[in-house]
Image (cartoon, rainbow, N blue to C red):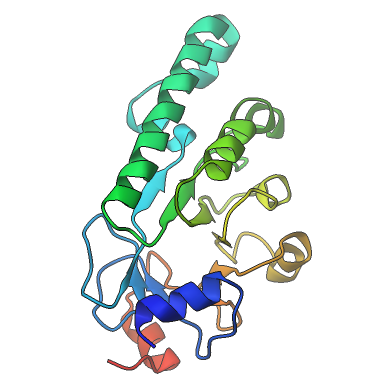
Length: 208
């Protein structure tokens, strides 16, 4: 099977051994890459898409403050951020991506309270994922008390997070379906952002 076929099989719930490798940076030996640039032929392409919370951070929009001081301004900003995210997901489909990695910012104690995220952002994420025009791997950003229990039921084809931040066993109890983690037991071996691909590819014995 090609790398694309191996990842498609894993995303669909099939058993693939060794687990397909998905890298955050281009590597011709990986089954797929998370990159804005199209990879080599035969590799799966999963471009990253930031959720509205992450998009607000990038644009310097203090939506958290506006929710307190100017709810109308906050709601308008949320709708714009949601629309921008929808456009980016659809553009990925039109460009021939196999899926997108939905970078879930905000669902962590360092960025919001449970009431803030659950009350203002969670349903926007849920709506975007439910209506996505191609498969989605949700990756929860943050290594400080991520709200995995809040987001584990989001509609997506695969789910990932930092396994140092949340116990893998608890995540499996909360979430059905493929997990994408830098862990040998994961259905998709998602190379850690801060690691080089080399040792994981060698360990997984992915053919060139």
